[in-house]
Length: 232
Image (cartoon, rainbow, N blue to C red):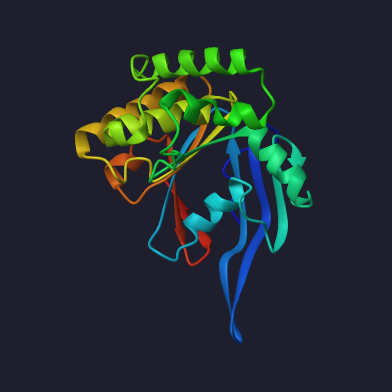
């Protein structure tokens, strides 16, 4: 049982968290009684070998998957029992996601990709457009608003993904291997962006298999066999 931060400071907290997958007559405990808290404004890297539970933890933290048992508190609210619609709404309003494969929609321009979360939040189109332009400029792509993902480099696509993740002004950014498809120099640039966002107050939780990337986080959490092996 590991508590990484005092409960009163936690923006995210898992209590006795289990995620169990049935495999025939056996069961796989991807999370096996995890207790962990993340302080507001912290920057964490989650590491571990394949099958360690790090991806399952990220999916649970991102409200993309549910615990089999246990509790997940997000900004003080127990989201474990929310129905699918409420969970989606909570995810849309409180979290931002950055993926290894960027997950941009190829038919949409840079501006429209950034605007997408705001469309689902019901923003006025003019306000959405202004917000997208502001964010594109902030990631150095103010002159690429009308480009489509196929016209961009990998680093530029990840910048668009970061801008889209920031559209709803989330307190928490979840980054799943954000440098995995990038060359070393571009990966360093993306990590510098995440470090700057953390300085601005964003809580960042990042999954990575690269030790040199993980070292940019303030804390490193090592998973093994569904439990937290250690924290560095």
